[in-house]
Amino acid sequence: MSAKAHYFRVGVFIMSALAITIVGIVTLSGGRWFKNLESFESYFDESVQGLTVGSPIKIRGVQVGTVDSIMFVGDVYAHQMSEEALARYGRYVIVSMIATNLAPHLTEKEKEERRTSYVTAGLRIRLAQQGITGLVYVEADYMDPKEYPPLDVPWTPRTTYLPSAPSTVTVLGTALHNITRDLEKADIHKVTADVDILVLEATKSIKDANLALLSTQASQVLAESNRITHELSRLVESREVKTIISDSASVIHGMREVVADWSEISKQTKLASERFPETSSRLERSVRHLDMLLAKKAPDIEQIIDSLRLTADNLRELSENAKQYPAQIFLGRPPPRVGSAKR
Image 1 (cartoon, rainbow, N blue to C red):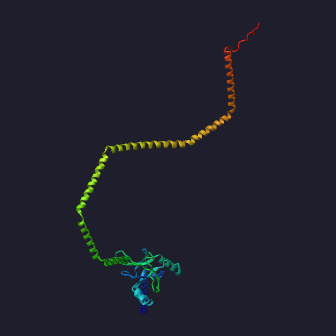
Image 2: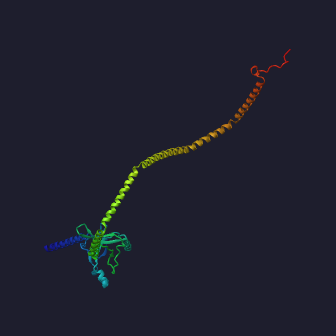
Image 3: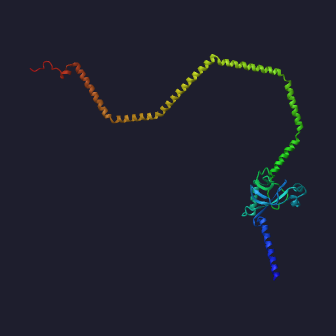
């Protein structure tokens, strides 16, 4: 009975250890066995110092995967390359990466088309340093595809290939190396000697120049300038110039008054032109009203005119009678005829 219990305890211990081991492996692996992952690889013609297996892969700062392995291209694809290609590309470093599948709903063909469009747009893989710690990670970002064209590899990649671009440190180091090489090619000693010769020639030319003659000519120029300045000062202080200035001031004042008067005239003209339509309209209404009044009172006016004509005739007849019989004005009747009195 004790032997069976002993075997049972041993079995439970083994099963527990196995379960703990499995849980630890899953935990340490980040649970990637249960994730939908994709494999990529890229090639670098530079040092990958600081990059290790497990280093993060980031797209514009967002981590999407980790580095799975770091090897030389010659160790992996030597059987697919010729001797010449091996001598050229064998030193390249191949970095294999595992990233989360960001589009699991797409088919493999659709994924390949999308990756091709991304690469054409300038998606490149490069090494980047994290702060000043020296830790290196893989960064994916978009760059100028013309400046960093994809590497035409003479082998068939095992996984999806993403083109790489040199890191910032490499670009800076290359630029400094080119500057140093150009400085080395330049003959600094010859340039210094040429500068010395130029300085000596300039000094000799200055010494050989007739400094006395130059000084005399400079003095003459200064004297002539002083004379011209004196003449101008005298001319400005003369009575004629002052009179011209005074007359000019008067003329300018008169012109200002003329301009002011002309401005007032322009304002009055503008005001009259603005009121002219209203005045014309009023005059037209008055004429129209007068025509209507004359048309309505035409008979009365004709009767008045006839009455005035009759009155004029009567006055004319009265005037003639007054000339012939003045007493009629006072007596009212003409005197009786002679011989017509009653007997």
